[in-house]
Length: 331
Ligand code: KG4
Ligand code: ZN
Image 1 (tube, protein in one colour):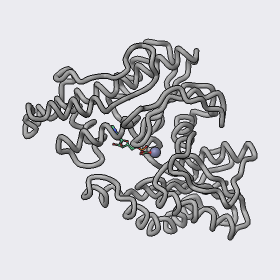
Image 2 (cartoon, helix red, strand yellow; image 1 turned 90 degrees about the vertical axis):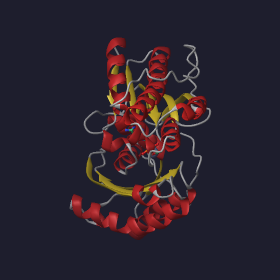
Image 3 (cartoon, protein in one colour; image 1 turned 60 degrees about the vertical axis):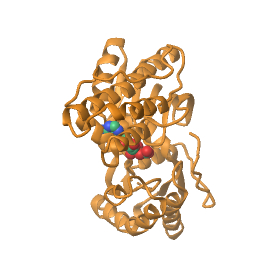
């Protein structure tokens, strides 16, 4: 059994899984309400709250899994990418537990957690596929040929998809985090009400860019009546359509280019209902098998970190106690 901690941004999370990666307990202490009044994550506030939550969460998952600390074979934590001061809380706690119990420590890449999450909940084992990871900090296409064998195909040149959702939501007066708010409003709007730009849609590029979309919405703002629910819903639906169309088209293009039939989608933005519907329809049309991370495993959680740690542990990997955190850790 492995115990994993996640504290890369504003969620503190702990999970326990078997050596095979089956999740026995998982818990997330969200700080969304705390950061909402600031309109975004305040790093120092996040780390202070991680300190408050981390120990109770460890005790909670041990109780939930009915496991004693001495039964844990290895302790894992996210070591990057993320906010340095947040990463230090989870890694320090996992290292302290590893030292106290004389067990190995594993530093886990947060993006590997997202990447492998579609294979959890009975969809495993991790295998050849083309992955789209869409979170608040990253938008990446990856060709995966096995655990630890990842080739970056394309990424965003500016904002991540989740960041675009959040920034645009803020511009139109919706609360943080904006992705789920736009998702809700979009269901009531017309996706063709505004024609917003889609970048690098030349049928060649696997790079993304969302800053043009942000600027287009900014220029549209004076013409909008955001007090009218239908006009707000139309903007949300049109923004969501612009973001999702690019994500879906590039994933299909990447799969064709890599000659893979299995595609996976993970990260917070993969909760988006418009994106899920579009992906399902388009993949069926293209004869692609689609594995979508379960919504509770899409947003930040420690279950995916435990699962990734278990895959690595099975391969005999461990990390030194001196392992550093890295805010820009590449996959
Ligand atoms: O993966 P995640 O929880 O954290 C990072 O590693 O960044 O992703 C958070 C991002 C936020 O930008 C949030 O607005 C977005 O995921 N998100 C959504 C939805 N749920 C979360 N974006 C669009 N639609 C959603 N339903
Ligand atoms: Zn994440």
